[in-house]
Length: 132
Ligand code: C2G
Image (cartoon, rainbow, N blue to C red; front, side, top):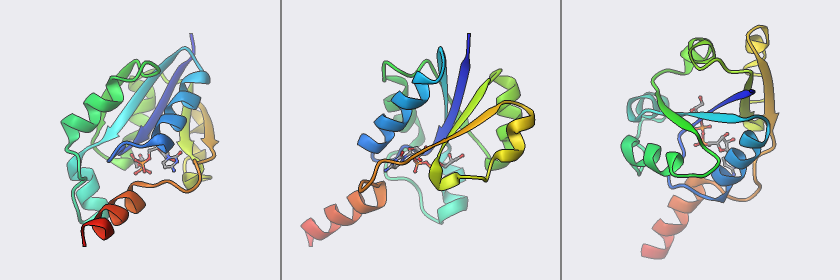
């Protein structure tokens, strides 16, 4: 049984998120997803996500490839989460390449390529432009 763990905000859920989660699930037998809290996002970006935490979690949890979700309270707690969820593989998008290599002492660390030309920021921007 291989446990896979990944993290993200998954705000304004889109195809890049689906691709990442499907490929993460393919690396093992059980996929756990840490969904960044509203407070964590605010501290990182000085704005709240468009979709609130409970809704982002419910969307991610509803996917067939996802077995379990939890709230990621802090970026610094990945080591604790790896242990708590017994992760064999930590999967992150390659925008984080190299940033989590120190967790290789706890589990395998894999960076997957992001889906090109789609992002929450661009979707929000294009909605704004269409409304102007
Ligand atoms: N993603 C992707 N392709 C895109 C956009 C996102 O593959 N075009 C991936 C990201 O690389 C990430 C996941 O989808 O693995 C979630 O993306 P975000 O919500 O942007 O996650 P992020 O804010 O980078 O995560 O501990 C990390 C934090 O939770 C932050």
